[in-house]
Length: 387
Image 1: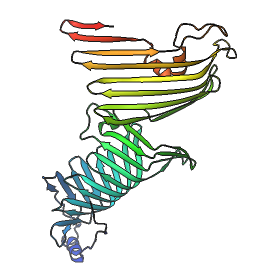
Image 2 (image 1 turned 180 degrees about the vertical axis):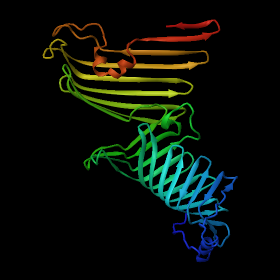
Image 3 (image 1 turned 180 degrees about the horizontal axis):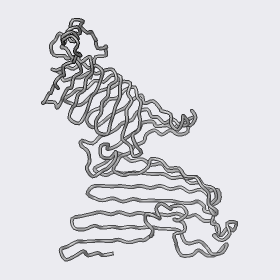
C-alpha cells in the first residue's frame, strides 16, 4: 500500500482570513463558525474537522490543514493536518498523529490508513501496548497494522531503571482480539498475543541476554522471567532464574513452556522444566520436573552436619476437564524419599521436605502430593463423587 510522502500544502487565503476577521460588527469578538461532523455511513467514519478544509482540483480529495479528528468504529485518529481521498477511502495524516484502538495507542510522524479495511502504516512510531504490568512503550521506525495485528520493525531499545537496563527487539508483533473478551480483565481483554523477534537485554550498555524468539499469549497468565536471590542456613546463598514462553496456538491448544536454573552454595545445582496446556473443550493440565544432581542434605539441627548426598527428582503431572453436568481430575506425582535421620542412615518414607525447599510456590498452591483420580457428576438428586 502506497501513501503520498509529500508534505501537505498549507496555503491560507488572505481574502478568506480577512473575511473571517472583518465580518463581525466593529467592537465584537470574531468567532469561527463551528463545522458539522462529516459522516461516511458505509465505512463507519465520522470526521470532526478543524477550522476549515478545502477540496483539491480533482474534487475528490479533501484537505484539513487546521486539525482533524476522525472516529472509525472503535478507533480514533487525531492529527495536525490530513489528506482524505473520498473515492478511495484513503487517509494520510501528518504532524502529531495519534491513532488509538482497543489494546493499542500509537503516536507517529506520519500515518496512512485505508478506511474500509482498517489497514495502514505509520512511520517514526511511539506506541503503547497493554501488558500485565501496565502499558509497554515501544519506539519503532515503522508500523504495519490492521484490525487484528500490529507489526513493529526497526524497534529501538529504551533505557529503564535510570539508564542501567536497555531492552529491545528486532520486531514486535501484537495480535489483537476481534472484540473485547468480557471474561478477561486487564490486557487480555484486547490483546491475544505478543511475539518478539530477537529480543535482547543490555546492562550498562553490555549485552547480557539474547533470544532468537519469544512468544506470549494472554490465555495463560504468568511472568516472562523471574529472578530470586537469598540465603538459607541449610541451603546456603542461592540464585534462582526462570524464563517462560508460550507456543503459538495449535488446533485450539494453548501451550506454555518454562525452564528453571537454581544454584545453591551448599545444596548444589537444580534444574527444572514445566509445561502447561489449555483447551476450551478438552480442559487444562501441566507437567513439572525438577532435579538436583546431586543434592547435599544438611541436618536441620546442625547445618554443618552432612546427612547424605543423592540424586533427587520430582515428577508431577495432572489434568482436569469439565463436561456437561460434571468434571474429572487426575494426578500422578513422584517425590524423593525422606532424609536419613543420621549421617549414612537409611532413607525415610517420602515427605514434602524436598518440595518445601525447592518448589515452595507449587507446595503452597498444591499442598498435598497425591496420586489419584476424581470424577464428579451433578444430577437433580445431588452430586456424586468418586475418588
